[in-house]
Image (cartoon, rainbow, N blue to C red; front, side):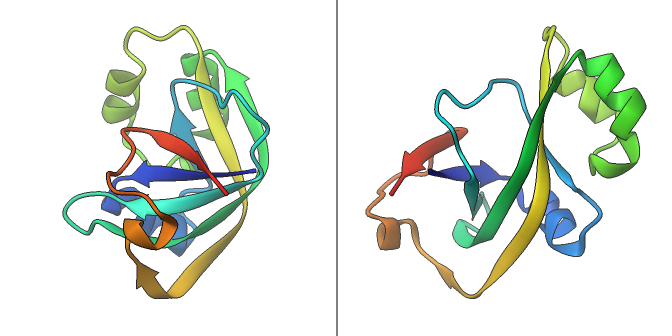
Length: 122
């Protein structure tokens, strides 16, 4: 199954550069997902590529940071602000990244409005 996921442009750049090998989330998917279609959020507002998922790690935020800080693509202060009131952190391990040659619009997927976090797609 695929999801369309909103990701900030600064993180999309790091994913494409290979310096961010985990995508961080506060909540897990409710279904089995193998591919993330990347929506680069404002100001870009384009669908730019896909992530093939290796696995999803569920951990305490502090432990996740200690083991993977060099691959998260985020500053420590920003990371702990994001997980401030969370007991669990989810890190989606990136297996492969596909950058589209031509960026797409949400309407190309039959979607009118970008998801706050993610939405399932066919």
